[in-house]
Image (cartoon, rainbow over all chains, first blue to last red; front, side):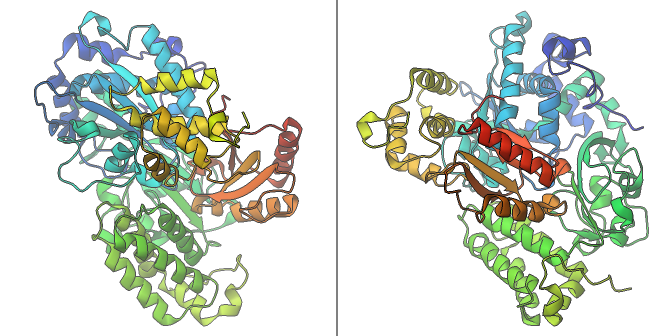
Length: 444
Length: 179
């Protein structure tokens, strides 16, 4: 068993309540930080921990925090990104639903570090029922003096609110999230200025993912150096992985970064292998935006080393032969899955979720979906495959926010690793007429 | 709360109005526009499950916004209905992890059972069937959302039982319902 931090007490009866959460050592990080540390010392521990943003980008959290501007007389904000919408990802929902106080505690400790007196949790609208759970937890925390005026007699004040969205993947992008929190359409902002300088209401703001914030409490409790000993290399700590698709045991797993991918998929401690005696075909290891990998490149790198669940190992080989850890949305495909249909499905998603601001993304996602639909239903041509490749290349890197890249990469990776399936659809339209057609075997 | 005919009849219940005022207080003074999305959710639940132009104008006046500021937001987010829909909107997740676990079969089953196509509403106004993008329930696929509730690990039998239950309850399901 690897080290558990975030989910250590997940099965404790009543852990949703403040009383039980406290009994299990909850809110210790708030006491330690507020009573014995300066805000800068908290930031320093987070830097030492090597913690990287758990929302998907993997940017060092301590560094992000240190960028926050501190002009006199201007409020600062911490905003938690609970807009979890990356297909394949459901870890934040699990954490908030099962142990809501772990997020509240992290919000208090992190807000203290950043000097924020008002903080928000922006949660996707579909998680309305989870927002109720958080609100109940917040009310408990207020009643017990963990929130509000003069927390622990320190003179530090913090108000914490939950804000629900209304259905828009793009609001997971931090500047779109801030626009949405201001009551506008979720159109990402042009950067710079970054939120750390000009964020919510034009004030310095840090936006962090749920898991990132919940992890801060553990870093404060154990110290940054101790936290950095967990994991492997620059992938320090533990990570929540949302495992789904064709596996025996879908669910959220907390892994110590560095677990071999093969162990993660086949061990009974984690995914428990592929059901119904099927074979592992492919995997999208970090949420829909990251490149899909065929089984042989998933389990071993191009250098024939064992592939590990870490930021570095999953991206080893670049996009030619690697992928990304991303949000930890781990989608497994067995050998019945048609990669063209999967890619068409994703392209529909990105077309639907493009905010429409940048032409390459707005038009490109729509063209890609149309072409993929034609190919999937046996009406495509060989030229269409090249056209698809061309379009994705003309979206990537040409938009204000990363949604363009996120739409392009899955298409590029599917063609790169599974071109034979696209060609099969063009060559044998009769065989793909049924939406449940069997895909061709991988070429040896 | 079904008076949609004339603008002067549109008003939140006292309870909803109280909630709106408490939501506005979550944001700094002068930033009441931040309350727009939460208030639109309340409005949708209060006024028959959709946002009519009159409802949006009412929300605009309540938050001291121009009507266009409300329209442009209401049209951007997928959870706001700009047309009347069934009392129970069945939103089946169809994104890849659910697709890998039979979401297409579930949609086909529901279409057949309800006698409607995806996007349509049953003649009795009870059910609207939709497919939606990833709801963050990939480990419990296939699934659907109806109002505030997630119904997970669905089979045809479970879908039957759910539809029976909703028919018996015969109430509008809103995202804002407390479950």
